[in-house]
Length: 470
Image (cartoon, rainbow, N blue to C red; front, side):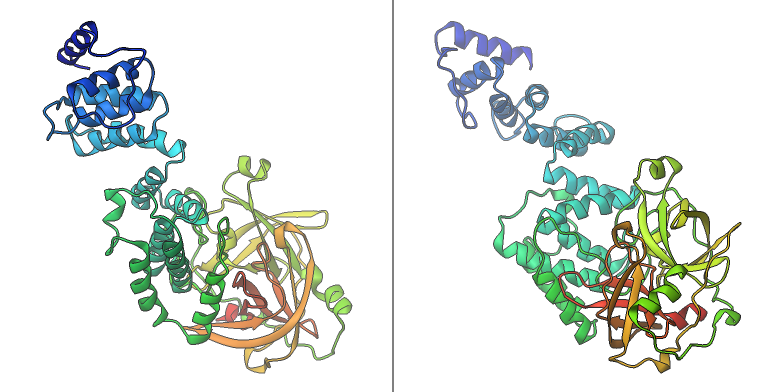
């Protein structure tokens, strides 16, 4: 604090104008006497008083304006754990208010506020990370969205609509826009910041969500739109949805499609269709569930993927599934292995290392090879044109890492989004099942299980097996 204010406040206390025992500071001071009271309280360790003093002295419209003293009081309040004081310090150094601009120093205060869980700070850090560390941006937004922060939900909606730091996925965008609209009507406006506000057209979540939702809904098929909106209506705080629909474009390098993860890992080579020699004729013998599992269960592998060996050892990897197409080749979803440097295939006591050999993240089709190793391939490939709604099908995958889990259901729809064909099924698909197999009652591979609409029973989707040969 400047020597002028130290001298003035000391004189007031000495003259009996302020009694330290009775000093209190519960509101922003507006007179010299109140200023002295707040100074006494702040000197005694009251962090709110210190912040309020800083607010007065940092206001250039006030006669008590003293930016150096303001920074000093805010520093004291921040050191005592006052989150609002951290925001004042960030703004002062970021915008150059009463002190030269110093973005690096501003970021140190921002980091402390983020560590303290301040919503405004997490939003600002996420905005800055969109171009610097897109995976971090996705992590921060998803965490806030799961807590019910409608601003973060809207930013995810915009992100999935445009693509870049997260995958372009208009179904996911509609999901978050719908959730944000509901949250905006029922919750108090969340704490935001001008750096974040600039990303929106409107000042409130409800209005922003309304217009964005209308634009998104017009570009989705009616049945998919209804499914996404039903899932969004069932959202509750604490939930982060699985992928809500097909991907229009992959995320920027360094971002896993679900919006989580970190940057540094090897790129997936360009997509090359599987050779026609692997498209074995479909069998026709009808089998029971037990026989189907005995026939094709050994062709489905658990995928464990991690960014580093250290993460793998620390059990911080990502689980998924893959289906063997020949002795050395498996197919899976790109979102299972994208940006992962260490990839293992497991089945029983067998563990093999796998390497991505081709992928098309836009359609979520990826393939890997193992060497050395010997895989047990799926016996037959079912043609898309031969599939019929109402057929019995079986899903085999590794939900939550639980190896060789069998589910049964029906083909409930045959869909095409752009060039990708999907088998809609009531056979269960959940996290960890991505990349697993959907088989018919003869044990032929129908599709590769890809995503499900959360909070909507039986809305599960697999990429047609034939599409891996195109």
